Length: 258
Length: 110
Length: 269
Image (cartoon, rainbow over all chains, first blue to last red; front, top):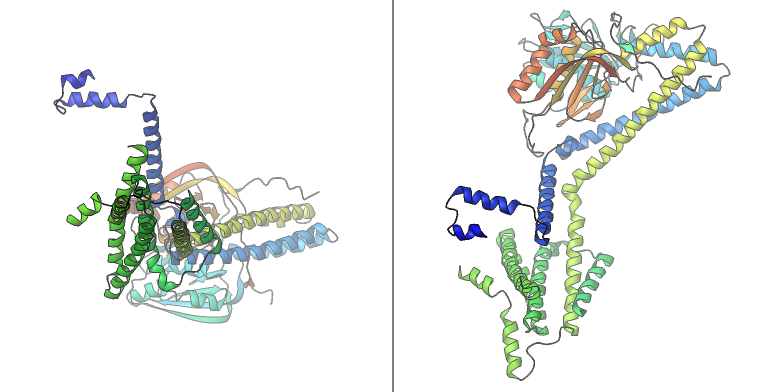
């Protein structure tokens, strides 16, 4: 209060203003102070909530049609996993029933090795599929377009693929080269031909989606032609170097085995 | 006390019955709500001022709703419906705030 | 201005004052009772109006914001189902491997070794080893969910697969993105602004973990197109990137390693 008496005019010196502010800021345990504290807390909470609301994270930032697409994909994946889970449960029950378990296990293991060999790209495969041809009269199609096409085909359920003479596996990479594109180090040139085993109808439809590879290729002066085939033979195989750094994680001892 | 109970009863009836509002009536609902709130706060203030009159309350409520709805209807016909309903809400909103300020002065002298 | 002044200074209906004055002149008290039938009925009517209005607004809500919230709820729900089934599948695979190992103990040692090697090559078994983690995250700051056009500060599926391509080129032996192990059948796609790997939506930051030669992988990646691409993402578009070498990275096995249509060639049909 003495301050008020000495300087009645509004803030002649900024030091006086600061002192007043400091005095107001000093904590006092009055009812009004507690109330103000409460209100300030509420305001802070409200601001932070609002800020949190407006900031986007994950799904919240997506538009409605994008969400519909994501929901569709996740739903389909759930159905696929459900089927796979039932198959595995049947296999396990067959193994666990144990009558012919040794012979059964050997057959199953062989079957699984055959499947894995196809996926690993070390064994040739056959099945229904498509032949996709990308022409490039202007020489503008690069590795990214082919990479995009492979992703699009994988999305449409392609199981086994071959680009030119090269088998596509998980670790296949594409780079640009003088003559065209190089696939895992093997140079290929236009027209690029991709063989894919999978559902021909799904893959054909997928290649035509708006914003997809077909549109990009046509924008660059090329064209995409798709031929559905009843039988596609994929004979190219890869010779993968033995993994030197990736080692299997120790499997926790299974209680299922006696 | 009795009017407050009536208000509560009306809310409960509305929640329980969940009447369907016809589409043509829907644009008028928010306006009617604001007009009703204005009448209620006006009435509370009149009670505190000691000059409450039941007939004036009823008439002011009904006329508020009817006039507000009519203005919005007119606006819709002229193609400025949303602007006019904003105008009505602003005017009634200002009135509600002034009345609430008077009520506050009566009850808390603050 | 007069209108606003009028509203602010005399907000109360002037009829109240007028009728009060009339009653005082007639020798009655200035106010009537609050509890009359008329007032009560009007109060009920107003209450009803409030409830109906609130109810109709609540019912209309799903058509606007509600649809998106509903969709997000459904996606989260089904994603949980997918996660749950993935875990169950991993558990079954392990049980089967255990049963097989027990039965094959004598006869199929070479087969077991072959399966183990194929597990690494296909991505179906969990692996660990030294390697590199490349992390990509959207440019900080609020994004407009309704914005049209391409937001340059957002990581796109294309950015992710170009980086992955660079890592394979640099000799990576196994790669996973946010816990999704890449196999020959793993698409890296988008649905609008969302990135999907193995048909699951993943959210930023996108962590691409690759196992490979600790002496060469970081250097080769830095020299590759992928490495240059990461640098340009951060320099030109403000995308938050980091490339970290790590001694011990563990990658989960892929959930889905099956084929439906392809058959081994030469085995007949």
